[in-house]
Image (cartoon, rainbow, N blue to C red):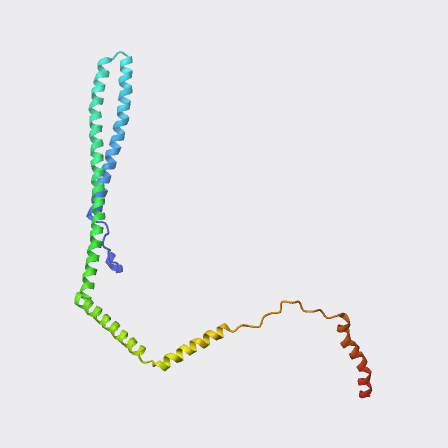
Length: 207
């Protein structure tokens, strides 16, 4: 019915390596649960063996300790299996990283090959030769232009340089260092007196 709605199933991104890692981790977790259960049982049996010795039941305590010894060996084997599973998971994960690095190197090599196909060694040598030729040609033009100026032109250039130098050396008038004398109050009032004196004359002329 999924095709009725026009939906296409996307390809799964889970690889076989991912599935293997998941299965290994699940087995590791089961072993750890078993290890935890056995450890609790061993502690319980050890307390029971101690109680049997206190009750004088030495034979039963000895039998229980033998059973405990066997379970201790199973527990040790379980620990080794867990360690092996963890190492295997780490190896697979590291291999996945190495594969990604190799894929990256492959892409880089393909890119370099494509670039080499676009521009070969002969093309690079040709471009370098053309660049050198252009540089030599420009240098020849510069040398030709440098020889166009006559002695008269050289003298004119030097004269203009001397004129510019003299313009820069022209000194501005110095600012007087002595203080400017102050104007007296009588001198300041003189224009006002003259204005008052001439005012009646202007009024008569206007009448």
